[in-house]
Image (tube, rainbow, N blue to C red; front, side):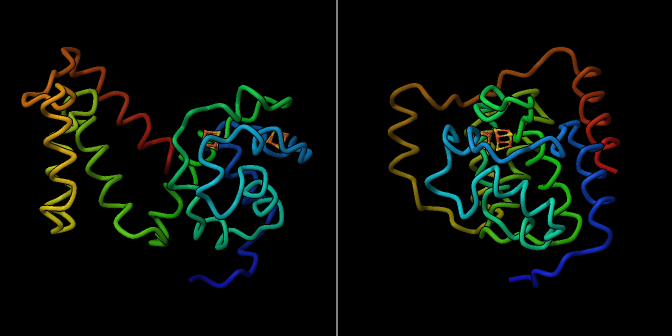
Length: 184
Ligand code: SF4
Ligand code: SF4
């Protein structure tokens, strides 16, 4: 667990997050419409509006230590409900990158899952569940849990043996390069 002190200059921290996420979080007036609709709200330690409040107070360590930034499913319900057009999915992506760069990852194995997921998208242009899960299992050395679930999914045709790869490799590569540059 990290200390909860404010880190650096609060206004420059807010500016950095606004700049990287493209979201006007300074406009948040805590109406909590995002929290009321958040699809992951019952599993997370903070609600999306609480994450914004912590950022506004400069409590970045607390934000980066939160499971919210990893459990956010990018459903974008918050963005659709927010009267100020703040899409928290974009903010969470920005915070994930900050957490990784500071080596603050509070949820066990989530970074390994994150890397396996993104690695699959980078290779195929979309997620290939079977190889993504295999990569994750090898990274965590947890080879046999969920095997029943995997078999059930396979029998129901939800797991495909071969990936369907996107044809436009150059475009895919540009997306990853642009995202990497954005996070610098
Ligand atoms: S809906 Fe928008 S303005 Fe309201 S609390 Fe959430 S982020 Fe802030
Ligand atoms: S995008 Fe994330 S923060 Fe927003 S409603 Fe969905 S799960 Fe909640």
